[in-house]
Image (cartoon, rainbow, N blue to C red):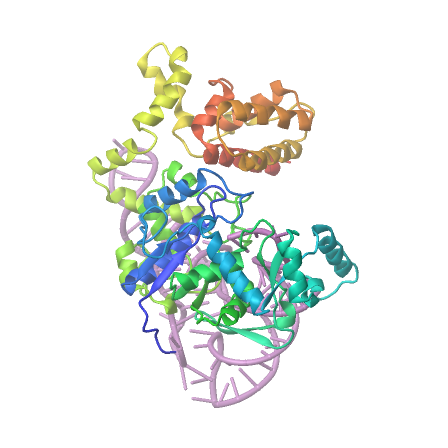
Length: 485
RNA sequence: GGCCCCAUAGUCUAGCGGUUAGGACGUCGCCCUCUCACGGCGAAAACAAGGGUUCAAGUCCCUUUGGGGUCACCA
């Protein structure tokens, strides 16, 4: 394979739908390492085409989290660049123009099918156990004139890609070679949604082309939609980028890493006292090796040594123990001054203490009582052995209590904000749904969150602890209870 | 279920036809030591299975098994 004469340009394209994900940092790391190794450009693009899932604070958290681990980008919404705008919601007109071009060439078509009809089609396919599940191309036969007339009249519709009816599509993956897909496995993918926003497939391809991305480095979960992208490049008559699909980070049970089973927010690792350089180094160990037996290396060393043939394709399990070991190495390397600075930048910061003090001022008589009384504000996981017997709800089995906690973990994740008032409302509905007295439910939560029977107001405490630590403790307690059952 | 990817200890990995299969986390033991931790030394622990190809297979091919991903107007 000849190397492209074009300067290397790569990108990550996170979607601002929640907390900054370790998977985002993982892919950012490989994009960054590859780009820097070749003196190329690393672009950050925000894929915010789904307004229903967008979270207001998410974009800024992504910026902050990536900068925290030590990665920087050359172009992006916050730093600008010659290929902007770098937020897809600000590029609607560009997508529309490109879709119109495809419709005009009859490489794409307008589809007026209702959601009900699509659901019916899918249900039928499932009922007769069809090997292929997908759109039945009902609107593909519409005359262009008629479709345009209906669209002009304001009829609600989407635009779909007219995929070839027969043949194969080959994806040249630089990490695994040629991967072939039969087109009969490929749906007539929606390109433009009825709200006028592009789908991922369209926006991604159009932007990667216009931003002159040369190498697409993304997670393996994308590989089965890559033939759709290849078809789109073909429809537009554009050159494809070089595809690289990295293995997926895994939970302990080997499934794709998920917040249900593993702390997945970069903010969790930050709050749990992981040093950014340790986290970044650890991610570099996932699916990549230095070349000799080195396991501890800086980002600059990784950049210098970077090579695709050092990538292994088995999905690596994200192992907290090994991350902690690596963190210890980095921690022990800090001077006392640096360690103090790290602590002051963490939970011993003025800002954090200012959140705690209002909760405990009335509860202390002397300064020396503060630290013993608030220990759980400075801890990661708690030790429940002293309160294990009380970790219960009357007339509910340990397994039932565990289940109840996990339900709350999910509810809390779905929440937008993280303030005491909202948390209390959530807590009350949750207790109500389970039929638990709030008195019992909230004592349980207090024990879970603080490992104590006495604490400042529960929901204020949770608010200060933060979403990730709170949820992690609930998960840990649920696990403990499940083991007891 | 269809399609696709993957496969060395519990976990992360080295290995790119000839190795006593190497390193690391974790686990266990010993040493250091006023305790604990650090540190040092050591141990147990792996080529998923079956067929080929080859003088020779963890390494190449096939099948099976197992794991994963994906099949949305989410990315």
